[in-house]
Length: 159
Image 1 (cartoon, rainbow, N blue to C red):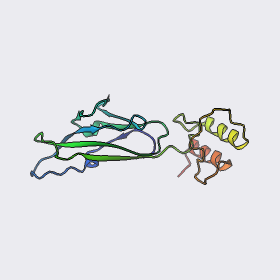
Image 2: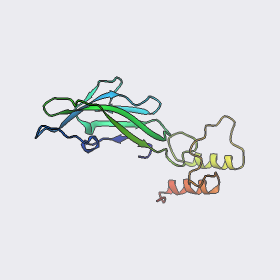
Image 3: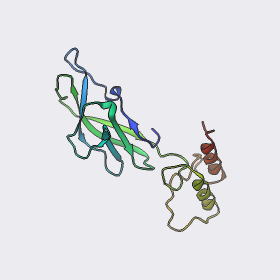
Image 4: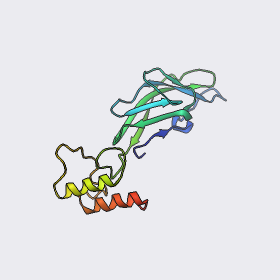
C-alpha cells in the first residue's frame, strides 16, 4: 500500500474454525506495530496497549508514519462467534511504500518538492534539510526526470 491509512476487511484475517458455522467476531491485538512504524485504531480510538480487542475488523485502521517504507507487523488472535479466541497468535504484515515525490518528507507531493528537487540538482538545498524519496521516478538518480514525475503526479497524469 502507498503510505496512507489502510482499513482492514474480514478477508485480511483469513479466519477459519473447526466448528461449523462459526464466523469471525473480532480480533485481540497481541503486539502493536512499533511506534516508529505507525498506529492501529479501532473505531477511531487508538489502540495503545496489547490485549485490546476490536470486535469489528472493518473498523480497524492502520496509519503509517509519514514516509514509512517497508514492512510493518503486529500480532493478533481471532475471536469466533462463540467468543472463543484462537489458540495461536497470527502475524499481520502490512507492506508500506513511501509516496514517490515527497522529497521534503512532509507527507504531501506538491510544488515544494519540485523546488527542493531543483535545489538538490544545482547543489543549493538548504543545510539541514530533510530529504527522502528524492529519486521520485525510480531511475536511481536525482534530476529533471524527478521534477517531471512530480509535475505529472500533481496533474494526475502518472500511471
